[in-house]
Image 1 (cartoon, one colour):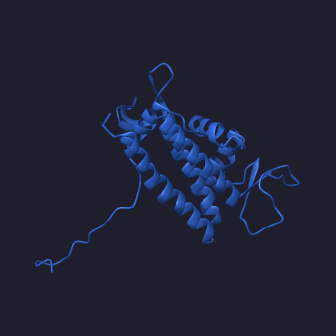
Image 2 (cartoon, one colour):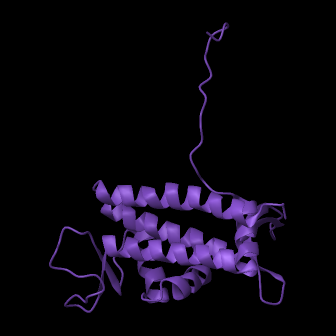
Image 3 (tube, helix red, strand yellow):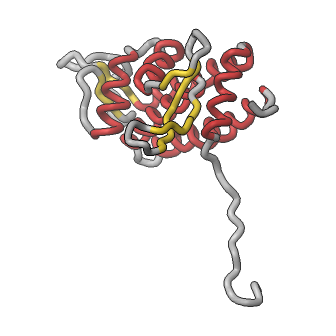
Length: 201
């Protein structure tokens, strides 16, 4: 591992994950992209779950002798094992978004909505224009209503708590650092245009 400090890691996560990615979700939600905001919110949860689990990428040779990058974690025994996205997601939700049913949120939001544009069995998604609906109320069919504004507020709280836990727990810092060093983070990049022509003028 590199000599990336706790302060540097937290600042990087704040700048990229929170101020760029999460704020982009909020901008989308206010600009008419409510469905996109639910999808991006699930991606955000997935990203945090990867940091929480300490996921890292590693090249392996498959049975067909091809080289693939796969995701791994260090398990409780200190051994490498292939990481499963569903387990990461539900573990993070259980810890930081415990007001939601982890398996159902994974199936309905991450798998159903994100990958298939399908409605789930447990949750339904609503924007904030319908004032007669309340977050976490039930529909007549028994599904739980997720109102976007409230859902994003819960994710904001989850990020803050996880951030605090990274600062307070060396184990969580090491896992987050391992995830960052393996895959880095997306963030704004300053692009300097290259001038065409022989004089570059």
